[in-house]
Length: 116
Image 1 (spheres, helix red, strand yellow):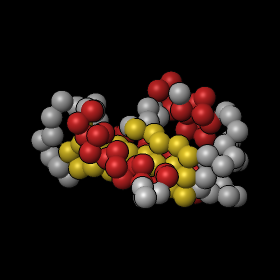
Image 2 (image 1 turned 45 degrees about the vertical axis):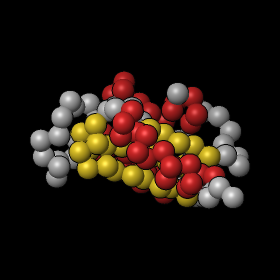
Image 3 (image 1 turned 135 degrees about the vertical axis):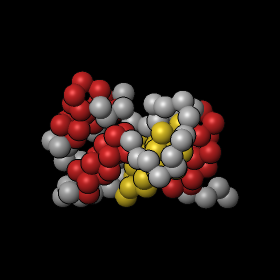
Image 4 (image 1 turned 180 degrees about the horizontal axis):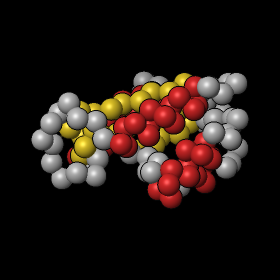
């Protein structure tokens, strides 16, 4: 889904990417991202330091998925018109709806503003 999003028009849009799977197909999405010139106006990315694991044994550990998200963030920031980006890296965050739900309010507020 992320690669489809990168291939389409992004004018006046927002994007919310939960634990983006950037390592798939030898990081092909990161290579594709390097050719993108127009990004959505606002992008929220949330990831846990322990995505892909079943438990957190070291809350200071950071997995490859976090490094990939930071690389994507750097790619976006290097474009001519970088988007507003909010990246949340949750210590000990696992690949689970429980952790994603905990980040939902922040993501929606960042993307769409505070409800009135």
